[in-house]
Image (cartoon, rainbow, N blue to C red; front, top):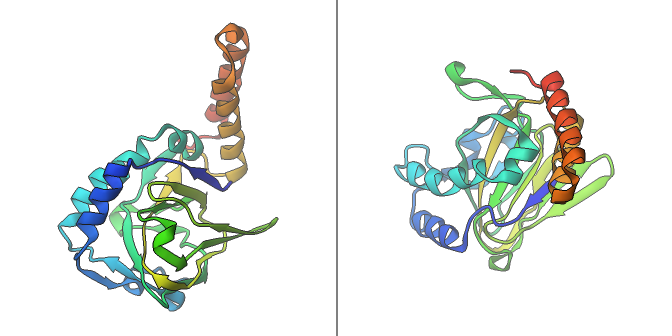
Length: 222
C-alpha cells in the first residue's frame, strides 16, 4: 500500500525544521546506505553526530508516530530514528530495495514500511520525485512540505535526479505489528470504514470492531 498522509507537520514545524537544517553539517549519504544501496546513493545527510537530531526528532518523528492515519496504516511496533537528507542539483538515489533488517546488533528491526516526510515545498526544486515501482506500474510522488508518503520497504524505489534547487526530506522505517502488506491494508480499510460510519450505526461499528480486533489478534506478532 502506498499512502499519502497530509499535514503530518504543521507549517510552523516545517519552518522550524528548515531553520535547524539551514547551515547544519551534512555528510556523504552513501556512508549510511545498506549493502544493497550504497552504490546508487548520491545525496547528503545530516551527520549522525549532529546534536540537532534530538530537536529534529522532537519536531518530526513525534508528529509522525502520533499521527492517527500513520498509526492506523502502519501499526508500528518499532520505528527507526529518521535520516535527514538533502538533494542538490545532480543528486539522486538510484533504484534500490531497502535492507530487510536494519539497525545495530543490539537493536535490530525488520523494515516493513518506509516513510518519506517532505520538508520543503515542491516549488523549491525541479526533479527529485520519489519513484515507486509497483505491480501496477510506476508511481511518482512529490508532496507539499509537511506531507508524508508510506510505502512497502520491499518495493523497488528511487529518487529521480534533482535538476535545480534543493530537496529536503526525512526518511524513516518501521517494523509493523502485522508483517504482511496485504493484511495491513485490509486492517487500514476496515478502520477507515468504521470512522466513516455515523453515530446511528452503533451496531455496525461494534461488528466492525469485532472483525478488526480478531483479525489483528490473528495476524499480529506480539
